Length: 397
Image (cartoon, rainbow, N blue to C red; front, side):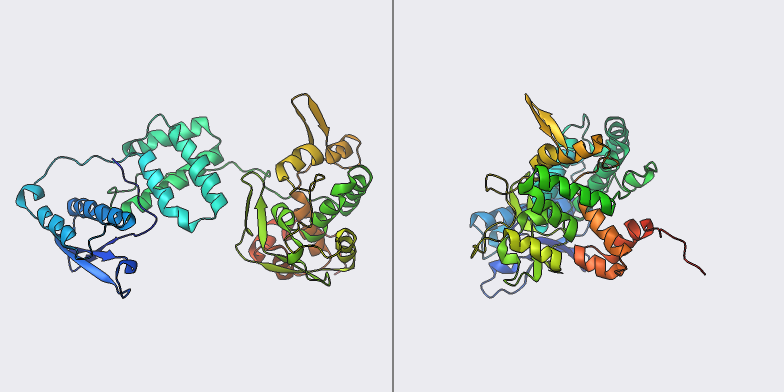
């Protein structure tokens, strides 16, 4: 059974005075007016399924350019549904399985999602989890929960079930299924308490040690690392930065884009909003030192040694942490500092952001000011950062 919905030319099913009516897209009307098609069918589950078959026909005609503007074809189909021999069907209609529902749901969600979110989460990660299920019948939601808990981490299982509940909620509202079998299932899973999600910033002295190590051993990447520490921007935002995002006087940065190195996609920032960032003296000196004469507006501010765009994964694995890939061994700058005892413990590249936020709060900037600088909400700053700032000395009272 093919239950995939189309992303364009949607026809809505509405209840009106105890009967179903169809709401047609304004795009098919020459004057852009709202058009309704009265079905004459009572509002019940059986009729919703029947009306959905006509809706599917109409949407297919819209997409293929065969839509009957007279509506005669669709009215004829609706009249056929009113015949007594069709209204006395007692056989149970076949239910779509989870894989069919998920594919239909992702088609519906695609226009509403960032391209990277659609590809990474909906079309890949969660689809692969659902595809791997040995059972996909909606009646087996409890068995699906138990299977996920035995094959995934508790956190991952809870996330998959949360997405399945959202998918089935949409399917109910779309008339594809009668009830949501995953309602409340993810809420019954309790996550273990741990501190793995707590932020772990570098100290100011560690930050300076790391910067010096890059200046001495990986000079090309030193400005990139300094920029991450001194602005607290997300790694993808620094990679995406072009000279058009910095005003000619080098007094203000506009963080408007991010770059996904895994998918090679330039996109908007995580919040979907651009933000202005003031440049202080130290940051200005850094930018002026690497700014080429009359740079092209589209030219990257930070590049790989070969001149191309920086790959976040490659930088993290080969330059920051280090790794063994095939016969080649990469010595990471940070891991080398940890091994030498110069830095207390290893932390990933994203902790440059945590370090900036923590240091700004320690310097006395308000929570709202820091939130505006880094593109977070004040609530997030309060929850994850402000509680970690402890005074070095207890003040007199």
